[in-house]
Length: 254
Ligand code: APR
Image 1 (cartoon, rainbow, N blue to C red):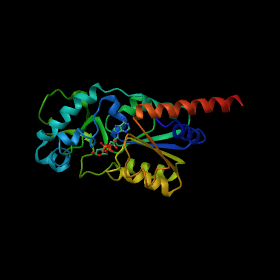
Image 2 (image 1 turned 120 degrees about the vertical axis):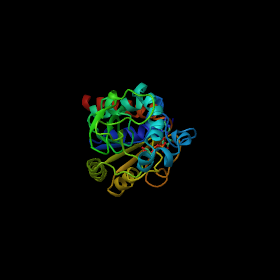
Image 3 (image 1 turned 90 degrees about the vertical axis):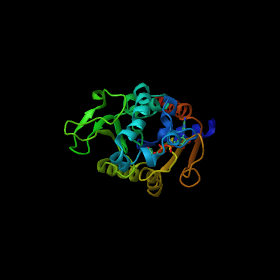
Image 4 (image 1 turned 30 degrees about the vertical axis):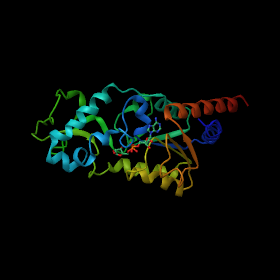
């Protein structure tokens, strides 16, 4: 872990009350949830064109639910890890104004963040495309096959499948925050999926400092990232926040 970059990031963050975080699946890997595109990731077992598009859901909902029953088991057991708690602490300290997440695992809320913008929905709710009803996932008592809605339609997790639109409110908030933040923390995302992947470019264009946390370099690293902190977010992010807290204490003792 690069101590110098960690300290430099903490010093910049400690000076700002207008930090926004954009997170991807990598922040939840240390909670036991596999990401999508790392070797052995979810898409290597469930090709997204067969299991994660809205067309695949309409064509064969039972098949798409094979993926959701598999990850549903993992999601139900997953707990926030130190990276999630570090972002909650950063909000509590008054530096972080929002988390924009691509994740559907609810872990930012469970860690204590209040302002979470979910670009790809949340797997804690079921949705019926036919009649637009929503139900808590706790109502699901099946081991296989797509659950039916009272209206007769097939229910899906309330998550954005490929081919579906990002919720318009989330899109608006994401864009607005990217244009107004001083600093954007980009954590555990491969920068492959739009429109979420456009946010760091927008933030950079509007003058923000980009601090990227990842275990490997991404398309962001040599284009928009001002600081790239290599390593597992569960170790690097808490270290940055620990130093921010120290700097805050020194400030208040002045
Ligand atoms: N700490 C930090 N980064 C990590 C860690 C970790 N412990 N483990 C993995 N990563 C990084 C990987 O190196 C990779 O760059 O997290 C990133 C995960 O990338 P993806 O699996 O592509 O996930 P994500 O970027 O969130 O995908 C975006 O694509 O498939 C869709 O809807 C799905 O929301 C998802 C979207």
